[in-house]
Structure formats: structure tokens, C-alpha cells
Length: 284
Ligand SMILES: NC(=O)C1=CN([C@@H]2O[C@H](COP(=O)(O)OP(=O)(O)OC[C@H]3O[C@@H](n4cnc5c(N)ncnc54)[C@H](OP(=O)(O)O)[C@@H]3O)[C@@H](O)[C@H]2O)C=CC1
Ligand SMILES: Cc1cn([C@H]2C[C@H](O)[C@@H](COP(=O)(O)OP(=O)(O)O[C@H]3O[C@@H](C)C(=O)[C@@H](O)[C@H]3O)O2)c(=O)[nH]c1=O
Image (cartoon, rainbow, N blue to C red):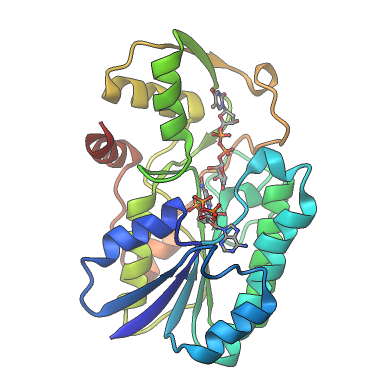
């Protein structure tokens, strides 16, 4: 039986891992919410690992408010980078693998070609910058680190674009959504399954891996599909990024190339449209 600690357990990925873990008999998961384990509290983290034995950690804790982060660098850095370093160090001391989640927002999005793990990063906002710093600190401090870069995560849990759209469809007759930012949505349940499948393997390969659902779209096309599948009548107007100003800049193109994770870990990845359909069936 593999014992796994999940930090940030109340977030959408944490809750999705809880849901999926019920299907894995050989894995025993321990879920720690922010109240139970604040990863910025060094003494608490060290104490936690003194007291308990785990075979893996999946760090789902993060500062994910992309716009807010622009005015809150210190907190974003503390959670996304400094605390990631701490978790990498404690797992390294125990010689256990560290699974950490990162983002497509580490790219600047200027090149319209699916991004490889080895491509040059150049984040254009504080969230992406602090996530990249977290990646680097994790890899430096625990050689048994697996970074999974994912994108545009949606689910029935927490806050995400899917839930924002469903709310707006109830409130508004018309909304504007950017059509010039391209990427790949990810159902958090698919990501959770991929992570648990990886952990279940006998042999692990460490380093950076991309994971999102298959396919690509703009946020506008994503919103259109949510509208179509939910039967909403709100008009969705495609607009350019300049017509929808936000505090943080987002990459124009951040589609992730999944070849590496599919080859190394033999994963079958559903398309975002099929996975969205499944998720909406649960929500509506
Ligand atoms: N959401 C997305 O679209 C994407 C997410 N990612 C990455 O995936 C991972 C999971 O994201 P997701 O589940 O969507 O994020 P959420 O924002 O849904 O969840 C993050 C969780 O982290 C918790 N948390 C924040 N600070 C701390 C802390 N100091 N100690 C412990 N827990 C803390 C939050 O607690 P509380 O509930 O109290 O706020 C929350 O439960 C993150 O690393 C994120 O950067 C990558 C690409 C896309
Ligand atoms: C709500 C809304 C957003 N938008 C735009 C703003 C933005 O450019 C894009 C996405 O909006 P959001 O702010 O909901 O999503 P955002 O917070 O940027 O989502 C990101 O979260 C972090 C955590 C990640 O790691 C990324 O992969 C990505 O999922 O859509 C519209 O054009 N119209 C709207 O009505």
C-alpha cells in the first residue's frame, strides 16, 4: 500500500484526487487542507513529516488568483515558490518522490506551436513567475521531483472558468469572451487520474511533464461549448484581449504538447470536449 499526502486538499485538484482515489485499492491517501497543514509554516511542515510516514506527496496547494497576484507578489512567492522549496527539502530528507503541479502560464505565449517541456519559459505575470520559481526550487532540492504542467483546469469543485460561465449564463443576456488566447482545457478529474496512474507505476521517471486534455481552443470556443452543452441562451461575443482588459497579462498561445507523458507513462488522454460533457452531466 502506497501512502500519499495531498496538500491543498480543498482545491479543485485536491478534491478531484479524493474522488478518483476511491478507485485505487493499492493507494492510501491522506488529505491535508490549508487549516490542517499550512505549507508556509516551516515548523508545522517539519513537525508533520517528523510524525508521519508517507511514500509520496502531491502538492496541490497554490496561490492561483492570477489577477490578484499582480499586487500580492510576496504571498504568491511564499506559497508558489518558497513553500514548494520547503516541501521539496522535507521530501528529499525522507528520500520520497515529490509530485508538484505547475502551469502553462510559465510561457509567454508568443510562439504559436504546442509547448514542449524543454521549451524556453518566460512568464508574463506574477502567478506564472512564482510558479516557475517553484518548479526550479523543487527540481533543485529533490531529484525525485515530478512537475506536471497543466492548463485551464475545470471541474465541479472550487472556482474555475466553467463555473464562472455557468454563473454568468444565469445572470447575463450577453457576455464578451477573448478569442485570441489559445490553450488546452483540463478536467481536474482526468488530471487526478493521470497523477494516481503515475504513482501506481513500479518505476518512475522524474522531471517536467505536460498534461492537459487533448485538443485546443480559445477561451471563447471553450465558453461556446459550455453554452451549447448546458443549453444556455446567453449571447457570447468573441473579443480580442485588448477589448477585455485584465490586471495580469495571459499568454496568447499556451497549448501543451503531451507527447512525453503519453510515451513515458502510457496515458490515454480524453479530449476536452468529451471531458467537459462528462463534467457538465455531473453538474447540471
Ligand atoms: N486552476 C487552474 O486552471 C490551473 C491550476 N494549476 C495548478 O494546479 C494546482 C492545483 O490547482 P487548483 O486545484 O485548481 O487550485 P485551487 O485554487 O482550487 O486550490 C488551491 C488550494 O491550495 C490551498 N492553499 C493556498 N495556500 C495554502 C497554504 N499556504 N497551505 C496549504 N494550502 C494552501 C487553497 O486553500 P483555500 O481553499 O483555503 O484557499 C486551495 O484549497 C496548483 O499548483 C495550480 O497552480 C495549473 C494550471 C491551471
Ligand atoms: C470571466 C471571463 C474571462 N475572460 C477571459 C479572461 C482571461 O483572459 C480568460 C480566462 O479567464 P479566467 O480569469 O477565468 O482564467 P485564469 O484565472 O486566467 O485561468 C488560469 O488560471 C491559472 C491558475 C492557470 O494556471 C491557467 O492555466 C489558467 O487556467 O478569459 C473573458 O474574456 N470573459 C469573461 O467573462
